[in-house]
Length: 407
Image 1 (cartoon, rainbow, N blue to C red):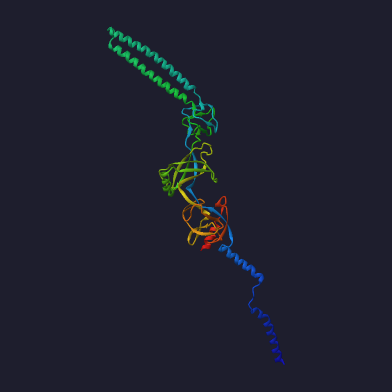
Image 2 (image 1 turned 90 degrees about the vertical axis):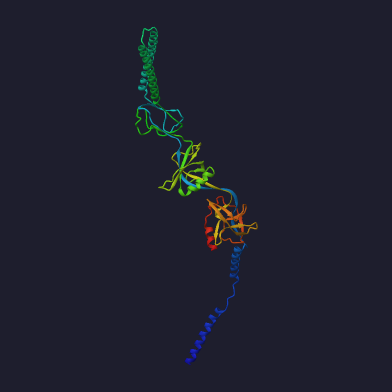
């Protein structure tokens, strides 16, 4: 009986196990509910890659334009003409006719010094001249009298010679008197300190009552001509050959911008390249004159100088964001009239800022994708939109991802 019970228990367990395990061994039929989304997802992926669905992208036209190649450096605005005013005689300041920061014209009186001593000396020398002129008149009369007496054999030749010598001495004395008077007048002119050129006055370093001396090392004031001005900057030695070639071929424009701003506030032409390279820095000093008629620039001001090295004339260009990299090299996504795209290999001549200069592979008027390249491949259909106002605002994530996908 015990053996029969064990057999019945084993049969019961096997029956339960068959009921549980057997259905799991059968193949499962696809669920009509879950199968549809899977098919749709597969179809969607297929459409995205094969062109069945249109991807939204931004396109830009290939252009033909002149592209300047520039070098951007930091420059300093310098005055072309600067005058440090110093006294030419010692004296007391009796009048100041200029203030700090005043704009003056050439010849305007700046300062006046005490001139009483010089005027007194001038009066004295003029009186001495008058005395010597009177003495010369008397000497000439004596000479004439001696000559008359000689003719009548009353005076000797020696007396004539002496009278003639006395007259000539007085003539020389009068010449000396006149030279002294001229020197006095020059000294007198130094008591009036006038502007030798027009410009803007800096700080006036003296005032009424001060004794100024020619031996003083500091200037009384400084005048700077505010227009035109000059920008000075340095470039690396490695850029010198290209810049020299540019200067030899055509005038080299220089544009001036304020740091951090895009607007050009002044422009000029490069007119000075230093004759040697600074061996301590490996740089070369260069300068360009700027009209500054509107007074936008100020001496000592730091600016951004943009120097034109050369120009790609009638170059084929696209926005730099259109350029992609793959296993086959550099390419763009070219948009066909039927709104399909194709990889188009291109050769670059140069990249200038956010512009790529194309040597071959594109023609002006072609449409290329500048945003949305991530999921594109040959044959994809696209919906095109206008380029953004500033295509360089597009980040490079799409290009990096495309390069990885191409690998």
